[in-house]
Length: 210
Image 1 (tube, rainbow, N blue to C red):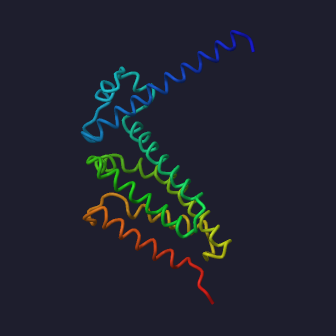
Image 2 (cartoon, rainbow, N blue to C red):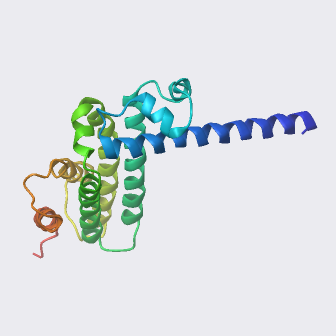
């Protein structure tokens, strides 16, 4: 490779790093403001000031405040998905992995909402966009659960005529146990209720001895 080619590659790499740093700074600033003041009250001007960049710079990376919020939604759900993938790959009985996946997803969202009092404001403000984005992650989570169910069927521990569909149905349980949590007085009550529902569903999948 010629010297000028190496120089161009290094320059491109540094430019990319600078862009990533600025984008991360914008997201970090946005999350700090939104969690304290709410989505509705946070403006692009506020975000730019907190990130120490010009307002025009924010628009270079994100077309709107909604797009910033969706990027933050992605970061949270990517983290959740990575942990679900880790749980799904563990060398444990399928029932245990299925239960752990559902409980992790439900309780993580509960903790997130309760840690940041304006989380429900965010959801209410851009509900259609968030729902559309979350659907992608729910489908991915359903795929992971379907894989576990299929493994359980192959090992003779579970029974399901359609493991993939079963996985998607289990993943849908996530959405029934998401904010708002008005019906649950405490984290413990939500965790207990979720565990009981999951156990009820898993009992239907267990292979019965003839």
